[in-house]
Length: 266
Image (cartoon, rainbow, N blue to C red; front, side):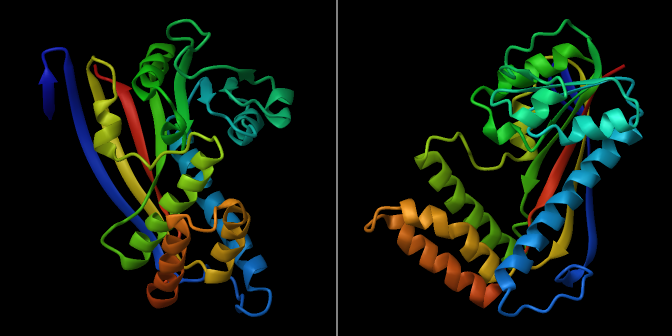
């Protein structure tokens, strides 16, 4: 147990979970002239795999009610409702799909709910989008009766293909931020822990990654519209060339996810 103060103690357990050999998933795709299209499907499949893993962790908690902060399209809300779990969603950029599910437009650092209004609060791959992470986590902990389940994309830096993937991720995020989006580097478990409010928390972290290579053509397809907006002499053009060469040499594997379960200590 790591004790930061008399009122701020955290029990931390870390689990590393890896699934599968290094492969292009378990589908008999051959990379050819439709490589970008198949690669895009692979990216979607891997993203869904991470979502499913997070949802499985949530349902293991047997939640009686859930608030999903940064709900996006409301995918988690639909899954919760299909299982008859009372839920609500909130997003600062509320889209039509989530609005149709009754989600609210709002600020994660100013949740319009009473203390302990939901058993669990979720923030899936949301923290690196937040302008005020400590404020958002303080609000999530206030509204949660039992705890907070959050996650962040995660790269295993001990693996060359993952280091290339993180380099690409940072490049892509810089282009998003040039366009006005708040899209910061992914946060580590330590950074998330440091942002927790004062209090006694039991914290369990898990790193999960399914090992799947992403073809260069799929990354090139994603990069194309960003390159079209990038000034001719911008240094990120040289960085893109270097990333492309690294993918050809080392390969690029899809990111994993860091899942953190934060419970109120007994």
